[in-house]
Image (tube, rainbow, N blue to C red):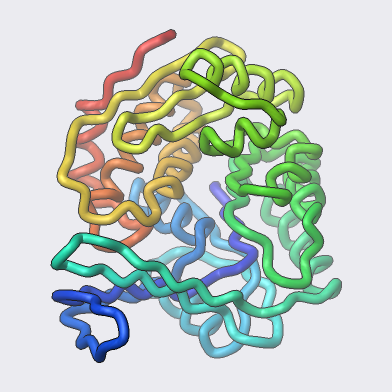
Length: 310
């Protein structure tokens, strides 16, 4: 089983407008709504790829109940910690005239020590029956910056393979618990090592430094439309994805993580796992909804991803 953790779950709404002028009334032509937050996006895509998955994290209020109901409708198991306050709404406004995307992200509820302790207990229980645990996204208000040390540690203690997809201090502290895989961007790699990165070779060496320093198995960096780079103890890999007409970029990184998690669940070789991750991220870019992959599109793209050793 795969378990995903979203500490600040959300309802994601995407509004499509013919145009989005500032300071004027705009009428929405179409909108989509779905449970969201990075970990929930991972759960949705992993389920679409045929994996058994449980979504966990923190929810609150009526929005939290809606999130759980929507996951029920998707036949995705869940085990959340409930808190007072309302889970957030995240709005993505698509201006169809310019193709631009504007995101408005609410802060979400404030959590207390009771909820944080309960989440660690929930993590331990779920990790006992999970091969892979994906901890994704930002921390809610009230959680200390080093909280992911506790969650990563709890999951690893139970023998799960842990993917940590976070940024800033949450990632920096979380690394101290030695997750098995991280997916930073180039700027985050540089910030973690306190150094500048001038070219791809320096980026690869920096990824290898992180791999050794924190005793990880994989470090992946997305290159957007140019694919991705992955460093493992077995070597360096480049994934090149086919050119596409992008519909939506929100959730592509989460879909990448989902593809990797499914490959780990299936115990596939590194090259096949990287290809699955790249194909899932690209398939999400062809969907209007964040964290949504059409299985047929995924399979078609999987055959077009090129993996090379470096």
